[in-house]
Image (cartoon, rainbow, N blue to C red):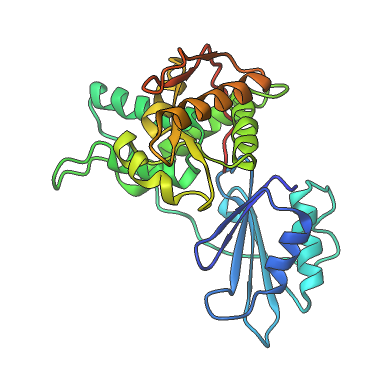
Length: 305
C-alpha cells in the first residue's frame, strides 16, 4: 500500500491505496465529475501534493507543489502511463521521480498576508485545547481540523477566526503532531484496536471506530452501518475518542441486533477476547448493560490524512 490519500472530483477519498488502484484512478479520468484527482501524503503536509487534470480527448496536466508558492510546477503529458509513473514515484519518495519531464514553474503570485489572531488568552487556550484534542484523536483530516478551528469560537454572527487564520493555526499544531509521531516505533494501541475491529468485522460483527457524535446517534445508526447478516455490533463515538485522547481509556458500546441479553453478552465476550488477543487491556464485568473499557490505553494514533 502507498502512504497517500487520493481525492477525486466527486469528493471520494481513497486512503492507503495499492499502486494498482492508483493506476486505475488515473486511467479512468476524463468523464464529467471524474476529471481530476489530488494526491497527498500520509501524514498530510501543508502545500505538498501532486494533482492531475484530464478531459477525454485532451492531454494530461500534471502539477506538483513542494511547499511555497514558488515551488509549484506543471507539465503536460500525453499518456496515462507517464502520469502513473510520475505519481507513483512521488508517492514512493523516489529521489528522481520528476526527472525527464519538462516542468514549467507556475507564477501563483504572492499570497496576501494573514492578519494575526486577536483573541484573549482564555479564548486562545480554549481554541488550542480543542484543536489539540481533535488532532490527537487522530480521525480528522488536516482540512477538518481547520474547520474546527474556524467554527469553535463562533457565537451568532461573531466569527473571531477567519478561514485563513484557522488554517494557519491548525497547520502549525498539525505539524507539531507530525513531529511527535515521527519517533514512534512499532504498533501503537490504536493500531491494535483497528486490527481487533477488522477481525470482529470479518467475524460478522459490525465494528466502527469514531462512529457518530454520541451514544444516541450511534445506537440509531449502527444497524445500517454494516452488512445485513451481522450478528451484532461494537463501536465508540467521538466523545469516547476525546476521552481516550485525554488519557482516560476508551469505552466501547456493543450489542446484538436481536435485542437479546444473551446475544449482547455473547458479543461482549467475543469483543473482549479479540481485543485481548491483540495485546490490549480490557475491563468488563460481563453484564450486558456495562460498557467495555479499554484501559490503560496509550492513545498514540497516527494521523490519517
